[in-house]
Length: 187
Image 1 (cartoon, rainbow, N blue to C red):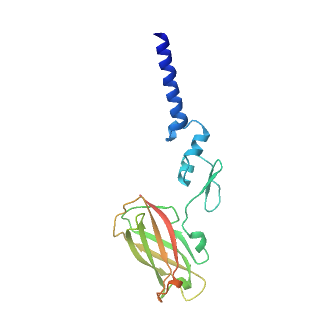
Image 2 (cartoon, helix red, strand yellow; image 1 turned 180 degrees about the vertical axis):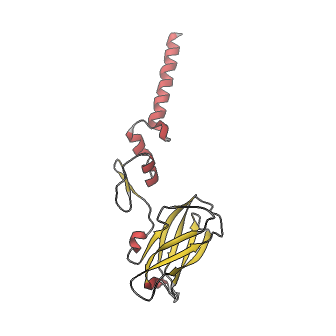
Image 3 (cartoon, helix red, strand yellow; image 1 turned 90 degrees about the horizontal axis):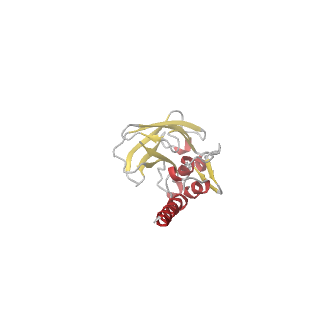
C-alpha cells in the first residue's frame, strides 16, 4: 500500500516538473532563463519577460542569442524626406478621439502645401483620411513643418494599425509615389 502511494507521489512529481520544464507558456511558471528565451518571439515578448533593451534607435531587445528590434515602420528609410514628431512609432492612440499629426517634410513632399494621410487598422480598414498642411513656405527643398487632425470615421477591428503619410503625387506616376508608414496601437 505504501509503495503505491509513494509511486503515485513520484509520478505526480514527474508530471509537475515536466510541465514546468517543457509545457509552460505563461510568465508565472517560467522558472529557468532558457524557458524565457525559448518563449520570446517578438520585441514585445522580449521586453515583457524582462530582457535587456538597448538604448539605440530603434530599440533592440536581446534574449540569449535572439535579438528583436521595435517596429518603427519605414521611419529610418525616410528620415531625410519626412519626419514625424507625433504620433511616434508604436504610440497608443485613443479610438474615436481626433488624432493630431505633426512633423516636418521636405518641400517636395507637398503639392500646393499639402499631402494626404490615411489611418488604417491591422486588417487594412480605413479609419480616417485627411490632409496635412504645410505651416510655412513649402516651395523649398528644406524641411517644412506640417500639421493635420484626423477624425475617426470607423472603429478599429484590431489593436494595431498604421498611419501612412503619402507624398503628394499630382502626376499619378507610380515612380513618384512615396510614403512614410508608422505602426500604431489603439486603446
